[in-house]
Length: 67
Image (cartoon, rainbow, N blue to C red; front, side):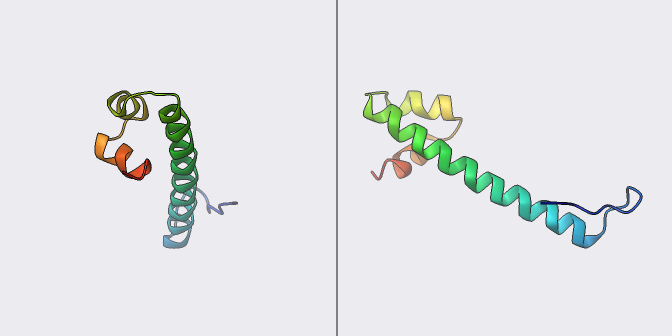
C-alpha cells in the first residue's frame, strides 16, 4: 500500500489508510501465530508455555486450539 503524505501533514484519509493497513497486517500476523501455536501444541507444548511465548492469554490459546 502506498501512502500519500503532503509535506509531512497527515490528513484524515492518510491516517485511515495507515490504520487499515495496520489492521490487515495484524490479522495476517495473528493467522501466522495461530498456525504456529497449533503446530507447537501438536508437539505437546503446554498451553501455559504457548501463552507465554505467544504473549497472549491462556484463554486465547484455548480458543485458537478450539477448546
